[in-house]
Image (cartoon, rainbow, N blue to C red; front, side):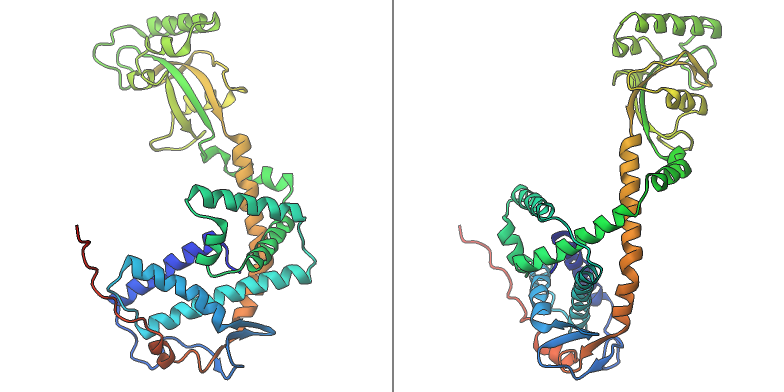
Length: 356
């Protein structure tokens, strides 16, 4: 019951742990870390309450870790304590999956069959884009289709329940508290500078009054239908003019590479629709005509809703995860360093170059 992306990240994390084990010698104690060990039924690696994680399921994922580790560092042979840590992490991840499934069943959280079908179709398409198949992905991740469906049905059901607990008011509140520092508008501009304006070239000799009059004339031409990108070439921001006047996305307030002057940002954010033009705006750099080219408000609110949904989901399930971990017991027999040493892979032979 492992999802593709979490599994991939999980395996990468185990590989990092294995690599770190090379730089740091294993602890001198007989066991690498304290873990509650008790005699468990044959084949059970971890138990918490009435949930049992079988050794065969741990080994199915462990095989993927060892395969990945061999590809990335073929000459490294993991120490027994590294193998034990990896198996313990795998077992705890599988325990969390089982806890999630049990939680959704106990709370009668479900999804419609077509929702699961749509998700699986999406995964199939992703696999195809990556040059593999859904069936091969299941094999590579050490899970059956039934396990895949059980986990993702539970995950999607929890996500749906969490999403229903996020109101429009919650989203708007988060937006109101944070939107000013998020790049939500993009614009193009035409800048007309005057002598001694900030960053003005020495070749700029027009007076402030002449610059304002020129900007007003350009605005009239724009309102009469002239192309913004072409008129931007008559302005004094050559870098922006080369891109049709585009200055990209920027926040309402803030400092840094993407920030604009307060006058510029305020005028841009007051524009309602993409394509709208501002009046002539004065800043320390000169006079601007601003055209709104992008508005990310809707996208940002979708991101907020997704973030709040995740937070609600975590609030629902994390206490259950914590309780399960607090009550976990590992097999005394299967978690000894001797057992791990017996499973240490044989040192790979040097790769021979291909004969031409």
